Amino acid sequence: MGGDHPNTLAYLRTAEAFRQGDFDTIASLIAEDVVWHVPGDHPLAGDWEGRDRVLQRLARLGSLGFTLREHDVFGDDDHVCALSYMGARRDSLEVETRVVSIFHFRDGRQTERWIYPDDTVAWNSIFGG
Image (cartoon, rainbow, N blue to C red):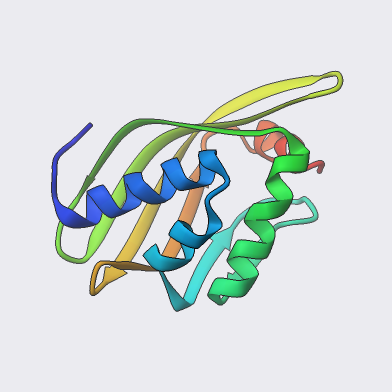
């Protein structure tokens, strides 16, 4: 992966905690007033405002068969860029798309995330849209 900047490592810890279902660790790595901008035409699209909302929505992803793997992650004192593959595996659906996520960090915690999927049809199907 693209480096050992503390914000990059914080993102990688968050992603691994998500894969492990460790929501306590995720909560410790994102700000209370975090905002995620989730694009698309599906039930989970829109701004996820606040840590509780983000954690609630992340918990729902397990039932959707959501998958996440990183291609590369790099960052600096203010931002992290994650180049990832996001997808879903469930009954009669196996789909994946490349995604660029840009994060703003403050004091080592995620404060904002913008998500840009490569394939919007695949992206919407991941979330049941």
